[in-house]
Picture 1 (cartoon, one colour):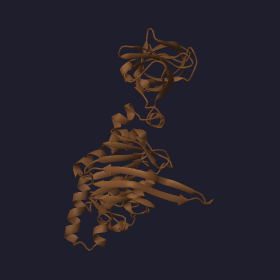
Picture 2: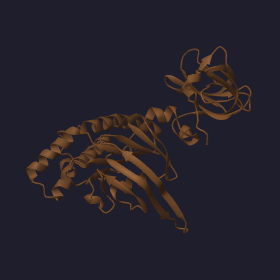
Picture 3: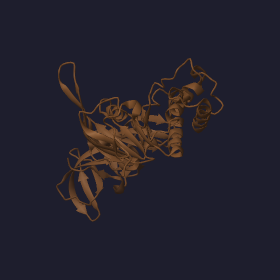
Picture 4: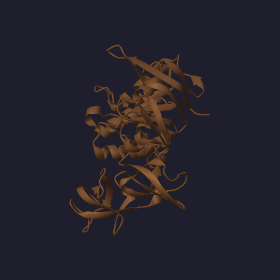
Length: 355
């Protein structure tokens, strides 16, 4: 049985103009014990509303939320066996790190000796042992985020909710904290539900990703499935860099199908499930194309240096949308204005489900 069970969750807000917006529109989701699930989507898609509904800060207009089989709907936030880590840290500046972490236990009247032992254990888990006497102002951004995490796990919640907790950090620290947070989740053995709009962050950390749009779930799956086998154009376009081709299948040749865009760009697709004359949309990631001696002809319009890689924008000779290609940087790497040929492995092509 799933740890968290959400069924037909609906939350409607009234706009200042008197309209109604469904921030959640019939959401179904299960989260397993010790699973890292990320809610991903653009601003306004409903991911934070869903998180706040789980924690009790938003009341559903319909549907249910259960934890370990117990209905949470009638429990106030402070009675729910979940904790939330916010983007803003929300630490008490006048308190030491140790007191910040143990404040919830202090309010509950836990004995000082027991409280101190739990604080020391929580700080050790997040890599801050020995820093309990410091004030938040004496810590880096990453260390303050760890204090917020320690404060959230000290009460041993069954589920930890994280609302874009890394968005205020610089890129290098953010990447470091992504790996540390995932490792911490594995050590704690509790479920995390993590909210972000950052696709790379979701791919890096998640056991499963929940892609949301306009209050609905578009797709749920492991990061590799979400990236490699998106369900529709929205997911394909939202998750990472991608090339989308609207094609008509011209002929089937065994395990391969030849298809062409209206502008004449030809791609080779896996033929399974396809028939001649069929209209399809195909997905190819920039790294799925390689520079070759022959193949799809085009001209490089822009070359963006990314360190070891070059991000090339290639205009096909026959016209149509530019194709994004990731190539290795080197002495022979093309630059803007160069003529190139592109090749691809048919097995790398993903054909979207029909709308």
